[in-house]
Length: 182
Image (cartoon, rainbow, N blue to C red; front, side, top):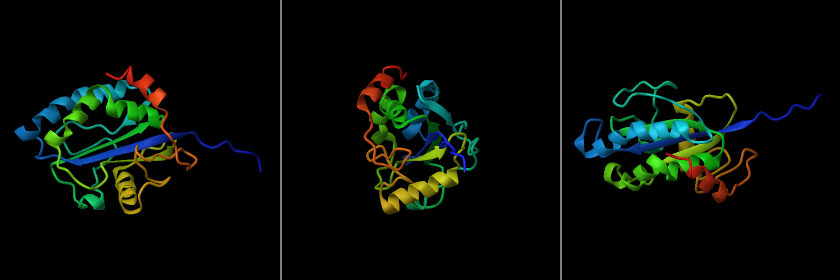
């Protein structure tokens, strides 16, 4: 049988959180005011591939219906915020998460989000060209919640590489990429 090179892998990444109020609530308006600049920043970040898109206040996403992980209650509420994206590598998503517009918003998250014990993000490797679904992402977050970080569902705190080996994020690459994050 001829050798077939492995399919290049991309990083699927979902975030999930519960705001202190739904869209339109003045208590979380500062969060919603930042959404356009954060999305613009992600789109321009080195290593960004794609994300599910929607307009604030509208439930339909380009990658399907939002799903709530069972560990978060298994029912999407108006105050739940979910993102789903694909990245080239762990360093790119890390640089984006902690720099620029998103990094600034992260510093203010306690003003807008309820505090929970559940995972707030999950990552896993997908074949290049695979578009993850919200159901797939919710299942991965439940796996992370139930089993802890594994090669199938992990966090930035304990990541794995595409081969399933524990991975140390290259901080120098993160710093280099962060310099370009807006």
